[in-house]
Image (tube, rainbow, N blue to C red):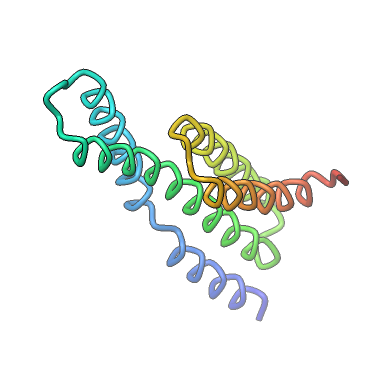
Length: 140
């Protein structure tokens, strides 16, 4: 019965983790930065195009923070059903995603998010930190 629970939990986790979307997000980040650099140099660019580029440069890292937190939560929910011999691997995945989320947060900050978005980003960081602290057995 435990094996069946583990298989069911693993199938749910696999559905939740979209590796292709993660790769696309990395490509989107590179493209957004290239467009942002272009907006700094192209004096003929319209204010509307520049504004669109700046909005995208903010949205991409915000989306990455959201994706990382979603994946962290999915792995965290999987842990109780996980084979005890591999929980450290799952926990390492959580820590790596948390680092990626913090890196994306720093990128979002450079793009001057509005206060409401900044507070939402900070709340997501607090949520992922709670998961990490639980795994590390570190009280705040």
